[in-house]
Amino acid sequence: MAEKEHLMKTVYTIGYEGTDIERFVKTLIAVGVQTVADVRAVPLSRKKGFSKNSLREHLESAGIRYLAMQELGDPKEGREAAKAGDYDTFRAVYSAHIALPESAEAIEKLAEASEEEAVCLLCFERDPKTCHRVIVGERMGAYGYEMMHLFGDDPARYVRHQDKLPKRTSASV
Image (cartoon, rainbow, N blue to C red; front, side, top):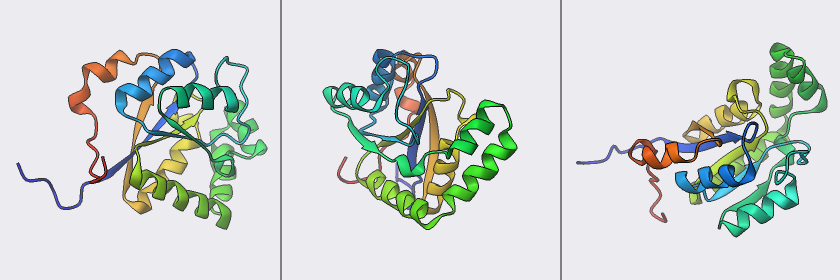
């Protein structure tokens, strides 16, 4: 079967709300994620294993690279609006932030990293619709990427459905 000339490339997204570090890492492994791009403005968590240094250690011990992308984090005003359930304000604040030149540079850096490795955008929220990572993923659409949202609470679902996962198109994989 001949492959299409221009296959879409995939960038994954995941939130760690509702899971633990072990199931989270197993999910990434099951899908074949090679790099986690942490797009939290404040990469700290009260949830065990998800603060920056601890997360990096867990990922690296599983052979997954940690990429700090704080410049793509949601500004405080946007985080507060999201926490309050005011998603219109959240989207307005984050859309203004991601339109900045430094954010555009960070998206380009992320797209370049994604050319070489399977990258997953990380933030807290389980539901991607209430998280800025979906806006980051949308911006990667300009580089030919589509998003696949992962949920870190049941890694076995990705093992069971391996045949439905996107295939890497890069010659290096």
